[in-house]
Length: 113
Length: 113
Image (cartoon, rainbow over all chains, first blue to last red):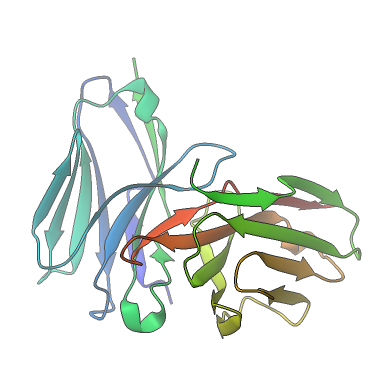
């Protein structure tokens, strides 16, 4: 059972545009929601994370929006750059499960110059 | 540098052979995780350790897989009698700071021919 669903599977955005990736979760026990960025041949790199007591978190050009009642969260990449072209994964975890991460299926983002 | 070193980075082996991957985290955190990632998919949880104790194993971890963390620092993941379906990237991860922030190594790519 996939507990974290991510969409879209891929997206193409022009340089300077906004990339938006959405995730939905089922397990209300989740209490930590990170996003990871992965380049080909590399391991996932932590980008930004949020806890459910906060509705939005911004770090540079990256913003997470969180909707606890809808059990959804999203990543916004503002002013997208070609260097942002990568695969992005949302994930969720909770302490009672050893903080192990459950990942979404990933979104391949291509930023065209 | 995520502070998680994995070796070897790439391994090509014939079906039926045994392979072993090693993970060396810089952090002395008591938890260590193994994940598997196939092409186009998100990482999937395999197992995790709290110090030397293996606390949870995913159903993905068949009896051909064994993981150890003998001194609570480095960890090994062995796959016996490899099958083509084992071809994937094997990722090691450890927490940092508050324990929620999880950092991944660069992964060990396995190709079974």
